[in-house]
Length: 133
Image (cartoon, rainbow, N blue to C red):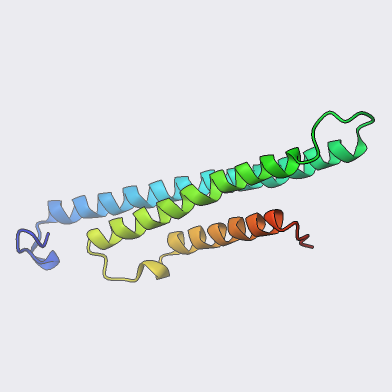
């Protein structure tokens, strides 16, 4: 846009629609990332509890004591770190498309921030062996 000297008001309808399609594609990509992150975080939390239950109630020790924590850490990191990278990519894409409204007011970005915060809190509690609830 700015390289050619055109203002957003001066663009043709087809160019405006192309920008909208690109923004919608970025929205879909961000939502897919949030969905995948929620799956990884939820599965990590679930597998931690299942493996811990098996470890505590099995008559013979089938797994090492640190296995539930290590598997959960891996799943939480696999869900949280890529989400952070996607949030940065989404922010840059919207800024590059010339969005006037703040990215932080975008509900998709807000949802990603909440999921990222949840994953980070779970990581901290798991690393520090702090029990929530």
